[in-house]
Image 1 (cartoon, rainbow, N blue to C red):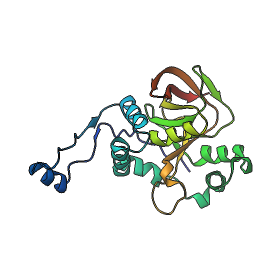
Image 2 (spheres, rainbow, N blue to C red):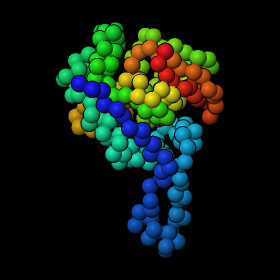
Image 3 (cartoon, rainbow, N blue to C red):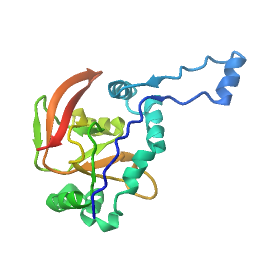
Length: 219
């Protein structure tokens, strides 16, 4: 079985939700002022806004809606084997980390995972350093939703990391489904293989949250 080749997807730019008929009617009679419809054009802008909104907010909702409408992201998920056919990846999803075998999970990622395209952007919340990092104890959980990364960063008093995939079609990943009865579908998770290198590019601080950015390639 050949590994699927994931197509690059980017939902930017996107707008916050349009005005409803009710909002327009209230504005027309002078009962309220129409809210501003905002356009988000780059990743840093999205992350900054989600942090300032403490996660939920118009930007986050608009991004989630854009991800659900992305035919390419949907194809990522549809190209993955069912969890029943990758028992170690399934176990990773539903059991505590200490009960899983990281090597076997990685073997399934290498055998069945899709290949990430150069330029794909993913997010992770955790403890990071302002330096290059070799990950040799993976696999590595990432997400397509910065608000999810923010939550995990808060859990460990860490940072949000933005991953820019540097290698083209070399890093294996499993894209979990974001619909149906699958557990943790709200995580928008993409699980990356072990043995990857994060090359530090820079950092920003928004409010009380640090955001680090890395290029990602095979170690």
